[in-house]
Length: 89
Length: 409
Image (cartoon, rainbow over all chains, first blue to last red):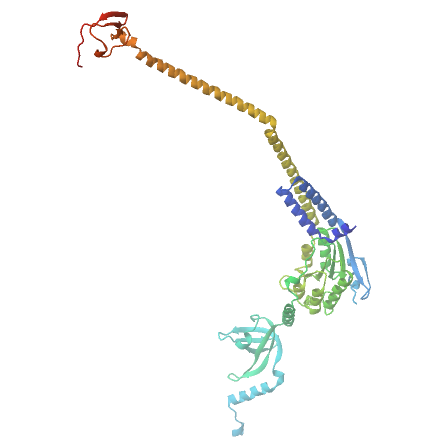
């Protein structure tokens, strides 16, 4: 659980950078067999995490409705409703 | 009929001087702003500018001296609509009244332009534009908000482009006025509101489609600039304009020339990212496969070299050595035997040539004493009357010494 939270906090680009580094190290071919198997597995895991991160968000187009300084709601965005949905405080 | 009195006769210059005074004492004619269009503009080599300011019905001569026009940020020209600030007075030499211009502003954008410049300088000095404090946008945004008019093309473009590039994106549309006197304040409040209740937003795009300077003016107002600056959530400014910048552009963490461009710049292409990922993955697989092959080959060559250094090989090596050695030994002995044979042959030849019988064959003879068989080489070895044998090739002759005689050779 703790580990999972950590994954959440690390941005995609950092994982991408790690992955690129792993590829580079593997391509250099100076690792022992054990090391290369280990970082290969790590790389595969990271690419899985990256893909998960890409697919994590659900598509959602919503419109903010501010009711007061402290109160708001959201509703699906619809272009047609137009000007009257602009709300001022 | 007309009564000329001395006191009522003016000289021309006195009259003009008087009229000039009238002008200069009338505060309605001093330090005033006049709106009109420039025509007949001339820049004299002295640096003074002469032109006529006119409207549909009327015109007035104007002069702007070098000391006043040296700070102009643009070159006035015919047809330009301007606001002039100056004093109306009289050019006594010609008896013409004219406007002595101190300041020229391009009409329409002039004042706004000045306000813009002033605010820009002020905020810049305060450090609101400094690059170091600009926040970085995440590569993969998940939740973004767009503050703009909910009806314009801008929001439609942002949504369309964003979803085309990254289909599973969460977009929060925050409707707002984007032009008019209240727009800046409203947008500023919405930024503050999002900062308070939507801390998870990756960034906020704020903008509108293109328009005139007046229509875009809200994005040049200080209240909005401050709100953008104070926002903890990164702000992307997306005001439609090609050349100039707005104050919002300068303060924002990222500026883009249009709302569409903002979406293009901030939302990554998901397909590209996925392709890139699979490329990395296949590179990784290829690399590790190659590593395995390399290691296998290393292992094979190691076991080969192990075998090479093992005892079996050593014994074989010794065998080979022995074989080689005995062969060498044989050949050396053979060589030596041959050498001896050769020498013996030579010796026996030499022996042949030394064989006394061979000499006797040629007619020489040997004399030996009897008895004793001592070979006689000198006269003193034998006495007259003594016996001796003469050996010749096919036998010997017994003889007796008759006489000794020395032969000198």
